[in-house]
Length: 386
Image 1 (cartoon, rainbow, N blue to C red):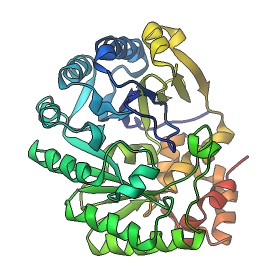
Image 2: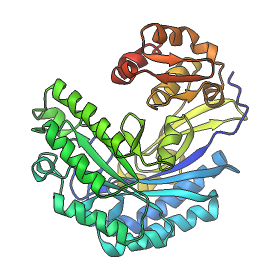
Image 3: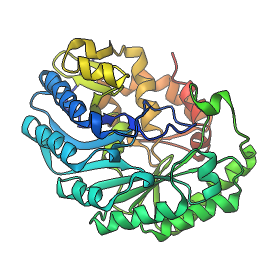
Image 4: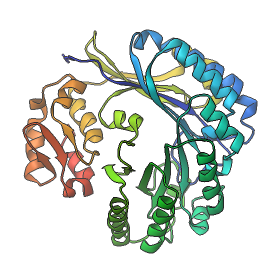
């Protein structure tokens, strides 16, 4: 039986599933629909019904962050999102000064929308730039060019967002080390508070999986990563997670909650959630129906949830470590007990093995991956598989 002594931080994730065009590398639940305004009113109403059906599970708990992801959430109007956020504020306990993030793509950037998002209380933007090189953007199937990306960032600032993230990828088809550094240099010149910089991976059920592009050699990709990390550090972007770099005091609150094995309620088509039931001493995972049309029909009913399962004890060490060991500085060891409801000694054998193999640095009250552990994270996590 799990034993929880403290309430688990809770975040809210909202999935808006539509894009103008599906990117060939994307394995997120996204669906092409250029005229999103046709569906946005029905979809927002469905989200509100979905939220209301979840209230008994989270009654009395405080929301620590909100993240509106997709898809391309910036296809939605400020008016539609204002209705949604107003409904959320009326039904949930919201922490004062809460971080509310929306994802936006440069190809859908509009000054009016960005000003509107700021006015309704969204205070953080995450821009899916991916590259500032037109050749690489074309290979990724992006609908914007480098100039549009720069313009979108300018609109972000003009709208009053002083906290924003730029998403970039490396290891792209035909990309050199110099190309990847140029992307980072261009990003840093835009003065974002946060940069998400991650390697392109070929995921199942994507166009790139069925028609793989030619990627740079593994050694070149490693050089990109090493030189890029040095450059970001020199420019005061602290790496706090495998692919996340932030100015001081600007780490993403929402993402940190994921990596620290906090709870999150996910609403929307294909959204996932993880909720700890302290009274019943269990942790549950949930998933919603993926198809937007069907989700709209079912939202607010039990049928909208396509997966619900209780995590068993043997799963919890891996579930915790696959998040926490992504953090550069690791975690205080008591966090394991607080978030899993188990004593750390339940994973002691695995931790000792990881330490002996030089993959973790395990002190009395602190645990973090070594440089080797960060490079071979999959090898590290395999130790915790039961």
